[in-house]
Image (cartoon, rainbow, N blue to C red; front, side):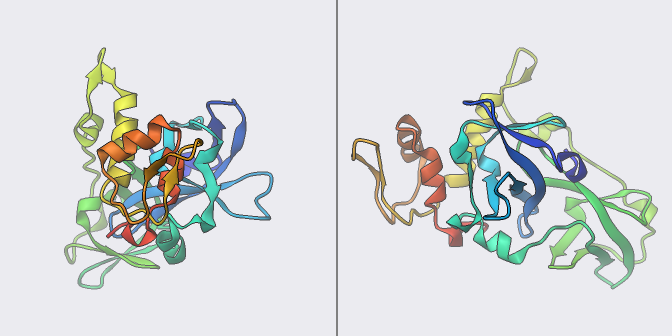
Length: 242
């Protein structure tokens, strides 16, 4: 998936069929080189910035982005992406230099894996090829530093792994098991992070306590009670991208 392709795509809520808004731009974790969510525009964008976490996205293609229910669209003030929002690394327009200081050009767009969020390559406007994420040494607020020195831009060519190799997901009937991919994405996002508050069922039964470290069993309990989104919103933001 290219960053330009996802821009302005509608976010559809599966449970109600309504359009919750449109993608404005990806939220990037520069340390991990991955898309962790999206800023979206809705009819009340002028009152509050809204975001969706990558872990809560059910599906994504060149037409629409889908989420299970309205709770997946949340306020940017809830904390889960505070570090990335404060850093505001948007990648597009970043200057690309080698570790020796040679300017290669500026990032025009980037490609990321629609299942994992991992950035796979960066298209540099002035170059004849793409920079792969393996070439990147660091990403700052305004520039990207890559390996090598004195290498002509045309020598940096796209070496994108196949989708199957990148995702490493179960396959059913010759295609991807999307439910398994979705579940693993959620697990990878939440496991090992600490809860900032207690999570209860609608009947008041405690699902998880403040300070508890999220594990697989806790996630399953939260999902069974329809509280997974609340669990995600309650994760310690300091654990995001450690």
